[in-house]
Amino acid sequence: MVEDRKLNVLRAIVEDYVATQEPVGSRALVDRHQLGVSPATVRNDMAALEEEGFITQPHTSAGRIPTDKGYRLFVDRLSTVKPLSVAEKRAITTLLEGAVDLDDVVQRSVRLLAQLTRQVAIVQYPTLSRSTVRHVELVHLGGARLLLVLILSTGRVEQRVVELAEHLGEEELADLRSRLNRAVIGERLADAADRLVQLPDEFDQGRRAPVAALVASLVEAMSDHRSDERVVVGGTANLARFGDGFDTSIRPMLEALEEHVVLLRLLGEATSSSTVTVRIGAEGPYQELSSTSVVATGYGPGDEALASLGIVGPTRMDYPGSMAAVRAVARYVSRILDEG
Image 1 (cartoon, rainbow, N blue to C red):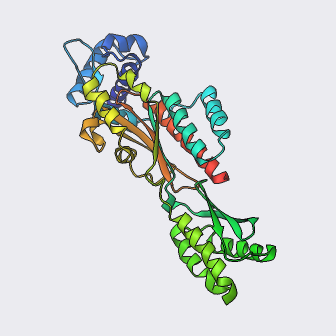
Image 2 (image 1 turned 90 degrees about the vertical axis):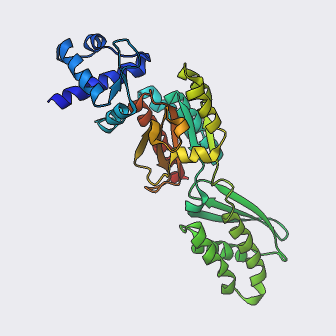
Image 3 (image 1 turned 30 degrees about the vertical axis):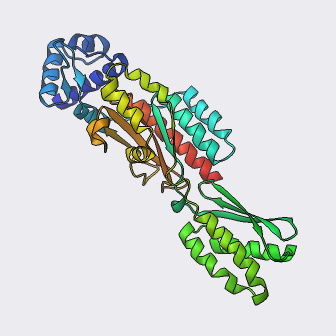
C-alpha cells in the first residue's frame, strides 16, 4: 500500500515536472492530483523518495524534480501507454499513405515523429543485408538491352540496364524471368546471390553468356550497401525547447546529430518491431548525452526488424506519449513495407 502510494506521488511529480518544467512541491501535488492523502503524508512520501534517489531538490526551494532513477521507475511501472488521439492517428494515416517509395516513407516518418513528439526524430533506412527478395522483373528496352528491376522486402527498388551480346525473344525472357524468381523470391540477399551464381549452369551452352551477364548485374544490385548506415534526422528545431543548459544539453546533441554512427548507436540494435525501448540519461552509450533520453523500436515486415526509428530528447519528456507515437509510427511503416 505504501509503495503504491509512493509510486503515485512519483508519477504525479514526473507528470507535473514534464508539463511545467518547474520543481514540484507537495502543496501543488495535493492541489492538482487526487492522491487521497494529507499534505503531511505527501511530504513524508517525497522525503522517502528523495532518500531512495528517485527525486532530488535542485536548489533551496521546496520543490523536487525526478532523477534518472525516478524516470526509470516511472517508465518501468507504466501500466498503459498513453493512447494516441484521433487527430494523431489520422495524421499518421494521412501522411504515410501518400508515400510513393521507400525514400518518401522514411522522410515522411521522420517528419511525423518530430511533429507528434516535439523531439528530435531519427529513422534508419532498412538494412539491406537483412532484407529478402520480393520480386525480379526483366523489361525489354529494345534490341539486346534489358532493364533489370530488383524489389526487396524493405520496399527498396534497384534498377540496372544490362546490354546483352544478343537479343532474347519473349519466350526466352519469360522463361529466364520465371527461373530467376524461383531461385531468389523470399531468400535473404546473401543466400539469393549464392543461388544465382549456379543459375547459368541450368542453361544450354549457347544461352549461358546472356544469363551470366544478367546474374552478374543482379548480384551487384544485391550487394549495394549504400543505405545500410543511412539515417534521417528531423525536428532539430525542437532542441530549442531545452531552454537552459546549452553547453551541457543542446551543444552535445547538435554535435551528435552530425555523426550517423553516433545516431545508430543511440537507437541501439533493433531486433524486434514489437518492443519499445527507453534509455534514460546515463543508460545511453555516450556520457556527454547523459541529459537526454532515447525512445526507439524496430520496424519491418513481420516480427524481425530491418531497421530502427525513435526520438531523442531531454530526460524531462512525455514518456507515455513518446512511446505511443514511436510504436504507432513503427507499426504503420512496417505495414506499408509488408504490403509493398
